[in-house]
Length: 523
Image (spheres, rainbow, N blue to C red):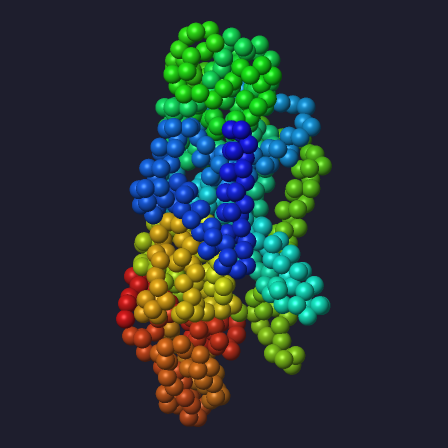
């Protein structure tokens, strides 16, 4: 029952969090928006003391069940292990923990976060890493299926489904998600939970707390016949039958060992539970395998990826990643306007993002510093943005953290979706009335690109589409002596929504664009 309960809960959380990233409606957010807030790193970033305390107590009581139930990347590794190890003759085997490497990775993660190198630290955050995988790889497939259903429904005059654009927000982030997915699959196929127990900072922290867990796996030496069935089936490689000990720092309480042991020699019991020999279980014996690294056997990490023998499964995985990368590049090229025409008369050039003095952060971010220090780059806000305004940044300073781009749409004043889903507090929750008063940036007019200013052509698109009337047309004399009316921006009223930049007909760079503020202002 313990294993079945764990599997049921893990399935609920894994499917729920995945659905948050691929859903094309707001249904998932209303029902499951609380799930990301139970993740450890987002809770720490949001200063959510209650959730952090809950996870600590949970680990001190039951061990690392967070990694096997709540963490989507951990459950993903279990799924991959289940699929890739089916029928595999080579079993798992006990390996000594790489404690020095785990400490170096954890220390590096903390230092990179403190020193502001968030782009590198974000690569190790488990929830954010899975979010990027789901948003970049699964969401396009989900939308393709949704569009197929929409097409079929349309043929029978039904509008139960609405088609959505197939759009890859960022090619570099997409490529990184592909590489990370292949890496996780290879590591899991080769050594089970290698990533969790070596490179994941959350796993290292919870592993330390798990040493003091009240409930833990207990080996009954009176029943154990040293058949190694439990050791060979342990994805965490933490059961050492030679010493009849369990490394609690790596055990994720998956309960597989209890399910596979033919003699029932392993049970999940409290730390004072006695062995079948009548001796109390000392804490030192339970974690003896974690002390020291002298004479370490070759671990799963010691095999370079290039040395993994090619298999049909590996070939198909590589082929799938290449196909997704090609499809993503084509989708983005199409989305940016290539081969589009204005009514079939002339081809429209694709839009290019202008050079901004500062990136435009979403309302609720408060400031550039607050956003960059608290955002973990999970891209949940990117997934739920209905106008595809939010996209991961490709710059080194804020790589993978979302910025506002206006080639595909503008930030509507009545939309607050991104503020409702952020689990870290990088985008704080605000109401619709409050959003209309927050100034994230200001529109800048470029007279060298504006159609009326350069040739005297009439154009009032930006004035008509400005949602708060901060743009008016004023008289202007062009270089050729013609009278024209050009836009003037009221910098005290402009909220930086990007509507003017989005609707400007000038290509490839709009004649008016938005520059972000260091600190958001309120009218």
